[in-house]
Length: 297
Length: 288
Image 1 (cartoon, each protein chain N blue to C red):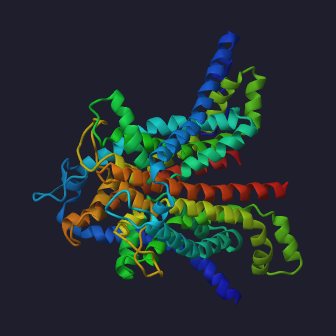
Image 2: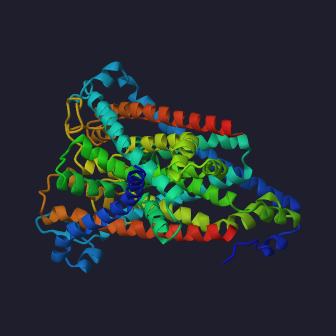
Image 3: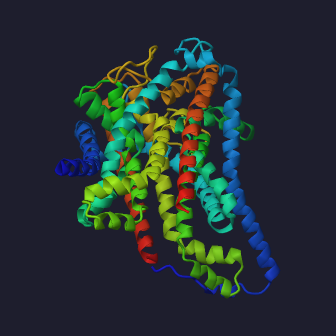
């Protein structure tokens, strides 16, 4: 099928211009309504959760460990756990993801093999996150005997976000104009020297934006962490990558799934902290993108 | 030095292949013991799912039905709203409106699924109770609604790409024939982008199937083959979470079921993703 204009439906609808204009106006209101709906949903969601969690949003909540009493329970262990987990995850996923993107964009010959890898990466991006949790459970927790440690969680999360990191890094590298590369080759630079000195610095803002958005995706991931056993009572902050941990979304899930209504307040307050971090990360990403698009013009 | 660097680059690119390979090996190897006791047809077509009962029964259809509740319900919300937003963004919105709306969509896409689950449990279900007084605390309707909200940004951004890829000349041709903007949009632009729109729908459905935390929190944990969306259901993903949180001993058949269910989940989502990619590739070729 080649897409083209199916003209007959237009030709048939001539006549009665006023009615056609009215239909057009109704349609434009309809689609605008759909788009503004997203803002309304977001507003309701944020107001609801802020309203529920507000009474608990004190420094005590951020600086207390979990507790059996709802009003004493805080998010300190989860906050530190998430901080550790994300740092380790990005330390693993960043070099590997950028390297894979460089290979696919700058070095690989276009052929069956690179197409295979590309299809494979885009499929991995669509695998449900809980499946990564099962992979992490079998591979890192059991086969590598890393148990319920931070490093097992970070390795699982790194595999989970790698496709997104690679895809966004590739886009950033692809948008570097080829005239820059050719100028560098013209000066006698090798392919790697060109990549390192010309392509990467020029793609840097785009790569950073992708990394920040991947982090904000990973911070909220809950299912894989539950699979690898991060849902336990933890009343300390981790000291190293082999320590046990809990993370913010896990703590929120734990509170939200309890039958006692007072823990719902804790869940809401935990969500507010989590969303504040996410908003900050997204804000930085938008600012970076805005700045680099200004430079390009 | 150069060889070392190239080696690292190649290894990184191939890591994705090993990941896929690892997922397949783990799922297949761990579900072999399960399928050597339970015949495949009993698993796929059985209508009773009591894997942890004293008299266990391993028909996966109730879990598939639970997932179907979520998919169908979320499709009714996420697909039309997503497509509508995409049409507005690509055809009607001024550049200024676009630059305001796009970050909102990205933000909506970035909200963790556990937050949506909490929202369903504490806001959507009480709201629905005003309309349906018989609704359960855990019900598939509120879970489906939040999953619909969750897939909306995916649909909107992929559909917008597809609509914007329709060449300008086709639109101008429509205007030259005297068509109104609505007629150009509905009879030229949307049909021209149809394969991209279809691809985004399939991808969104695959997202909804794999969704875990919102359905675990809001849809409940009872696997029943029901057609009533006011009742609680258990999805495939929610079952995996419930067993992994429970105290089922490793090595028992009850524990092995999570790998069998996960294998089924993987096969379904992989099939849908491959289909979506194939459709998308065809449409890319047609305009370049």
